[in-house]
Amino acid sequence: DGMVGEEITANLRTIRSIPLSLSGDFPSLLEARGEVVMLLEDFQRLNELYEERGLPHFANPRNAAAGSVRQLDSKITAERKLTFFAYGLGRFEGALPSSQSEAISLLADLGFLVSSLRQKALGIGAVADYCADMEKRRETLPFEIDGCVIKVDEISLQERLGEKSRSPRWAVAYKFKPVQALTRIRDILPSVGRTGAITPLAVLDAVQVGGVTVSRATLHNMDELMRKGVLIGDWVVIQRAVDVIPEVVAPLAERRDGLERPFIMPDRCPVCGSGVIKPEGEVVYRCEGLDCPAQIKGRLKNFVSRRAMDIDGFGIKLIEQLVDSGKVRDMAEIFRLDAATLASLERMGPKSAQNLVEAIEKSKG
DNA sequence: AGTATTCTGGAGGGAGGTGA
DNA sequence: TCACCTCCCTCCAGAATACT
Image (tube, rainbow, N blue to C red):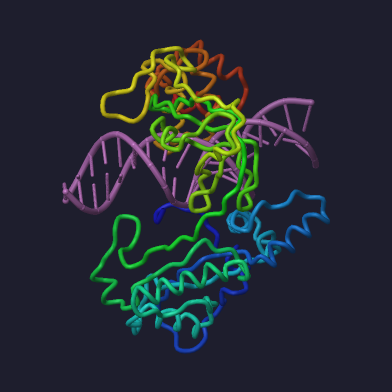
């Protein structure tokens, strides 16, 4: 996140397209930004190798590349064969290029691999043509892509445009149409989140979409479900929104056989049995229960996963046990657990329980 | 009024813990 | 030692909410 992260230098040194020394007239300080990818050819070869070794296949190049970079043993990373494409400059000391395209040419001169598909386009028409052309050529490329990045070329204009909190205003992604697939909705379940929001969740017949097995998809809320007109038992088109989140696009009404039935929002929370209300002006239905285990677990999970508390090995499973046994309803209560409960936790044995006990003892100090 | 941020959902895969 | 399990992290759309 800019402050905390993983040390992957040793792994990156195994990537051949990252030069270990720069060539030509290089600046005194250079931060090369880019992307690590696994070429389709290398992905296929890797899976063949794993096949020979009797190991499971990798599902897709993107996750295989992400996992390879995180390896603790760089020998494994070296074997995976990754490729690095440089696409921009970060910190820099020296004669700064005046445009994005010059910056990329500079990176190439210094010995970095840069994309040969990049192109300068004058005007939005040329940009649109380029994107359309790339979408056509998508299947023939040596790596998977899901779109194009369009950048303002002149650095002075980039500086005038500035940045938003997480992304610059001078660059935008154009995403291709997502890959779609057909499957059937087995059931729609009401799922209770940490805020009590009850979300209709489609349980699907598992189907492959863009290198991933999809078996569940959120329908967000009742309005969204009604707008799409989805029934339990429907054949539906699904897609991965921008290649990540599974989404139900639309039902195929012509495939209905009359056995489909609508999802009805329960009037009692499926987890705690409390009433379900739809607050005025809101889209979501909510569980009214103050002690709803689903909400408590959700809140505690969220709290822990955001590392608000620095307890090593503090397990979600342990939280669930504490909530299920009725011993804990919020974070503060964890620190007020009585001696008998702590003792029984310690007897449970798992390291996470002992870590928790230790953390609580420390907090009392 | 318009823009930014936060929250929520699911899947894949690595790391590390657990138990036989 | 090995198989299995849990957890974490990442991605982004849509809704709600916060901020300018």
